[in-house]
Amino acid sequence: MCKALEALELQAFPTADAADLYDEAELIYLADDFPEGSVIGFDGPGRTDPVAVGLGVRTHFDFDNPQHVLKELLEDAPTKSGDDPDGPWYYGTDIVVRPDYRRRGIGRELYDLRKQMCVDLNLAGIVAGGVIPGYAEHKHALSADEYITKVVAGELYDRTLTFQLENGFEARCALADYMRDPEVDNYASLIVWTNPQYAAARS
Image (cartoon, rainbow, N blue to C red; front, side):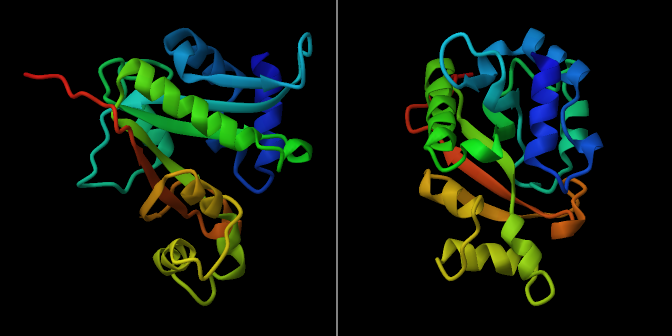
């Protein structure tokens, strides 16, 4: 299964550096450390080829210093997978829908399942670095932050960020050098969803 998920990632992110995506060994670590944080979609009962996946880890995210590189964030955790069992936030490391299965509501369902997982585990919400594929067409005229601002305002459409905004996420800022993708000059968008049912532990 993990080998099939590795192939699905490569298919979904053809312009990204493979070193920044999950490989089979990393997926095995994640399944062992935090299985509740992963959702895998199949096209019907008995099918073994995944068509969608949502992956993530728990983390202590520093919102006062939001700039980060995904791999470095995972390396600071106490487990090989990057999961911190004491972390109050769910960090969405990956959400993938096979290209020929897109526009069927699968991505929205993955986000809904992640939100419900946050409610069930009493996590503060979801934070992630979201890809901004539409920036490739505007990077010579706009900074990444300017591009994100225009997408949030509805002046530009981005097939990923617009979808995330429609699903209740905020776009906080651009993330520089988030992962190697020359098409968008290595930029991503910091997105956040806050769990309205979260009850912080009292000290």
